[in-house]
Length: 69
Image 1: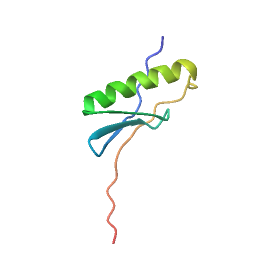
Image 2: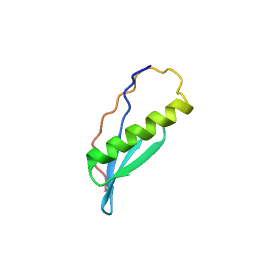
Image 3: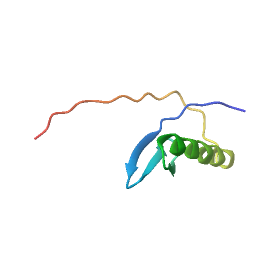
């Protein structure tokens, strides 16, 4: 069994938190951030059991600040 880390994006829509794993394409939701992440983790595990990802080098995420008009 493999262990791998994935990025998770979280945002709020109406009264639910949406959690998205952009590397895999899975999305789930919950009433709290913790519930959304737990649901996403389960959905992603199930997805990867059926559709394993190829081995890749680690990816890093950061942010940038941009000034615009």
